[in-house]
Length: 193
Image (tube, rainbow, N blue to C red; front, side, top):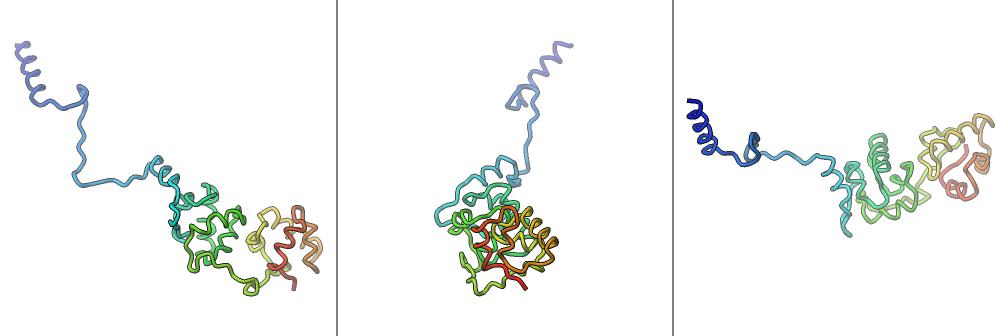
């Protein structure tokens, strides 16, 4: 009787054979249902895919992984762009993207052909800008200036607290890290009142 049951088991197994390893469980997903590719490998592949010569990215809607496709933009800088955009609203000009900490002129020049803005690549004329009052500016406003990060902004505020108020723009030279070249960049962007 045991031999008969064993033989019957072999016949059943042979008739209902499932391809694969013995004892493997077959899995069949619902036909037509596809899950989105959201794996680390898929995101890495999408981020590493270079931009085509005429391909553009909208920095006002792009995710951090899409922004990483821009030249000279890594994961940290892409995250700062998204954070800046969420805190201050959409970018209108390339100079507003330049206000993101870590973006300098070299990065702006590299990404300019690949970003789409309301007026792509437009830079406001200096006459259109209203100078930032050094005697009333907040730390956040100071950080929006080119070449001024969190440490220099805090040092400017410390100097202002120490001297009472700025009388000339040249007093910025007393801030560690601000030299004549940085002062010239800031001259048209800041004022005293």
